[in-house]
Image 1 (cartoon, rainbow, N blue to C red):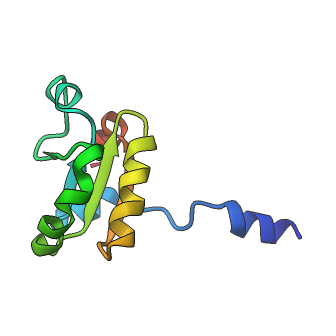
Image 2: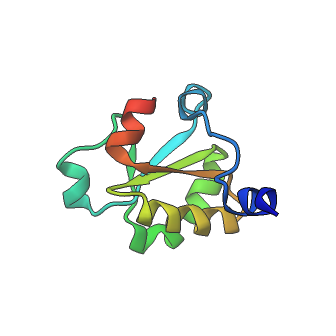
Length: 103
Protein backbone atom coordinates (compact mmCIF):
# COMPACT_ATOMS: atom_id res chain seq x y z
CA UNK A 1 0.00 0.00 0.00
CA UNK A 2 2.77 2.43 0.94
CA UNK A 3 4.55 1.78 -2.36
CA UNK A 4 1.41 2.79 -4.27
CA UNK A 5 1.39 6.18 -2.52
CA UNK A 6 5.11 6.60 -3.10
CA UNK A 7 4.60 6.03 -6.83
CA UNK A 8 1.51 8.22 -6.91
CA UNK A 9 3.11 11.19 -5.20
CA UNK A 10 6.74 10.96 -6.29
CA UNK A 11 8.22 13.53 -8.64
CA UNK A 12 9.43 10.76 -10.93
CA UNK A 13 13.04 10.46 -12.03
CA UNK A 14 15.31 13.40 -11.30
CA UNK A 15 15.93 15.68 -14.27
CA UNK A 16 19.53 16.53 -15.14
CA UNK A 17 19.03 20.17 -16.13
CA UNK A 18 22.76 20.71 -16.81
CA UNK A 19 22.71 17.85 -19.31
CA UNK A 20 19.56 19.20 -21.00
CA UNK A 21 21.15 22.66 -21.36
CA UNK A 22 24.39 21.14 -22.63
CA UNK A 23 22.32 19.39 -25.30
CA UNK A 24 20.67 22.63 -26.43
CA UNK A 25 17.56 22.97 -24.25
CA UNK A 26 15.90 26.38 -24.28
CA UNK A 27 15.32 28.04 -20.91
CA UNK A 28 12.06 29.98 -20.89
CA UNK A 29 11.54 32.38 -17.97
CA UNK A 30 7.79 32.96 -17.57
CA UNK A 31 8.02 35.89 -15.12
CA UNK A 32 7.00 39.44 -16.04
CA UNK A 33 9.49 41.56 -18.00
CA UNK A 34 10.16 43.60 -14.85
CA UNK A 35 11.00 40.50 -12.83
CA UNK A 36 13.14 39.14 -15.67
CA UNK A 37 15.07 42.42 -15.97
CA UNK A 38 15.87 42.36 -12.24
CA UNK A 39 17.83 39.12 -12.74
CA UNK A 40 17.68 36.00 -14.91
CA UNK A 41 19.65 33.03 -16.18
CA UNK A 42 22.17 33.97 -18.86
CA UNK A 43 20.81 32.90 -22.25
CA UNK A 44 17.23 32.44 -21.03
CA UNK A 45 14.29 33.86 -22.97
CA UNK A 46 11.52 35.89 -21.32
CA UNK A 47 8.03 34.68 -22.28
CA UNK A 48 5.57 35.82 -19.60
CA UNK A 49 3.05 33.15 -18.59
CA UNK A 50 0.04 35.19 -19.72
CA UNK A 51 1.31 35.13 -23.32
CA UNK A 52 2.85 31.66 -23.47
CA UNK A 53 -0.03 30.14 -25.46
CA UNK A 54 0.76 32.61 -28.27
CA UNK A 55 4.36 31.35 -28.35
CA UNK A 56 3.61 27.62 -28.71
CA UNK A 57 3.97 27.59 -32.52
CA UNK A 58 7.31 29.46 -32.29
CA UNK A 59 8.58 27.05 -29.65
CA UNK A 60 7.53 24.02 -31.71
CA UNK A 61 9.47 25.39 -34.72
CA UNK A 62 12.64 25.56 -32.61
CA UNK A 63 12.32 21.80 -32.04
CA UNK A 64 14.19 22.00 -28.72
CA UNK A 65 13.56 20.71 -25.23
CA UNK A 66 12.17 23.55 -23.09
CA UNK A 67 12.94 24.20 -19.43
CA UNK A 68 10.56 26.67 -17.77
CA UNK A 69 11.42 28.76 -14.71
CA UNK A 70 9.92 31.63 -12.70
CA UNK A 71 10.21 33.07 -9.18
CA UNK A 72 8.98 30.08 -7.16
CA UNK A 73 8.08 27.27 -9.56
CA UNK A 74 4.30 27.84 -9.66
CA UNK A 75 4.03 29.76 -12.93
CA UNK A 76 6.70 27.62 -14.56
CA UNK A 77 4.67 24.54 -13.59
CA UNK A 78 1.60 25.98 -15.30
CA UNK A 79 3.68 26.80 -18.38
CA UNK A 80 5.13 23.28 -18.37
CA UNK A 81 1.61 21.80 -18.37
CA UNK A 82 0.53 24.00 -21.28
CA UNK A 83 3.62 23.25 -23.36
CA UNK A 84 3.61 19.53 -22.60
CA UNK A 85 -0.08 19.45 -23.54
CA UNK A 86 0.85 21.06 -26.86
CA UNK A 87 3.35 18.29 -27.58
CA UNK A 88 6.56 20.07 -26.56
CA UNK A 89 9.08 18.19 -24.42
CA UNK A 90 9.18 20.45 -21.39
CA UNK A 91 10.45 20.36 -17.81
CA UNK A 92 9.67 22.66 -14.90
CA UNK A 93 12.99 24.03 -13.66
CA UNK A 94 11.29 25.81 -10.75
CA UNK A 95 12.74 28.99 -9.28
CA UNK A 96 15.15 30.65 -11.71
CA UNK A 97 17.83 31.30 -9.09
CA UNK A 98 17.78 27.67 -7.94
CA UNK A 99 17.82 26.38 -11.53
CA UNK A 100 20.75 28.69 -12.27
CA UNK A 101 22.79 26.80 -9.65
CA UNK A 102 21.92 23.45 -11.25
CA UNK A 103 23.20 24.35 -14.67
